[in-house]
Figure 1 (cartoon, helix red, strand yellow):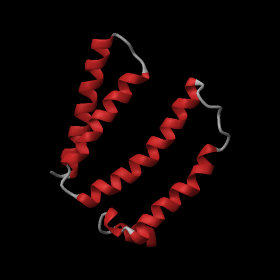
Figure 2 (cartoon, rainbow, N blue to C red; figure 1 turned 90 degrees about the vertical axis):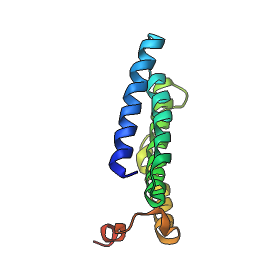
Figure 3 (cartoon, rainbow, N blue to C red; figure 1 turned 135 degrees about the vertical axis):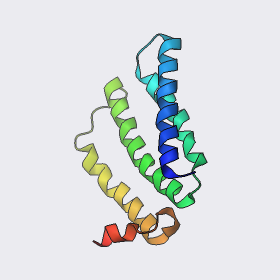
Figure 4 (cartoon, helix red, strand yellow; figure 1 turned 90 degrees about the horizontal axis):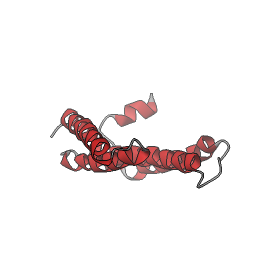
Length: 117
């Protein structure tokens, strides 16, 4: 399966589940989006390119961590961390560069042109 098919399936499953959960639960809260997103994320298993799958998982991990902290801040579970994005930039970037240097199979071919340009 190609990348475009994966994206189409991901967005289609996400929207379908989101609408169904809204109708079934009769609530409009963050749990509908969270449940739909987690289930739709499993569509990545149908992507045939292991390199692309690993690259997307690394990207999604970084975004999920940022989203998780934002949700915890909004709900009052943790205090707002001033300059959180700046503090997380270093560790996450070092994670990506480690993968770029030593786990090259995680990146799609041609990505080095972007880093070296």
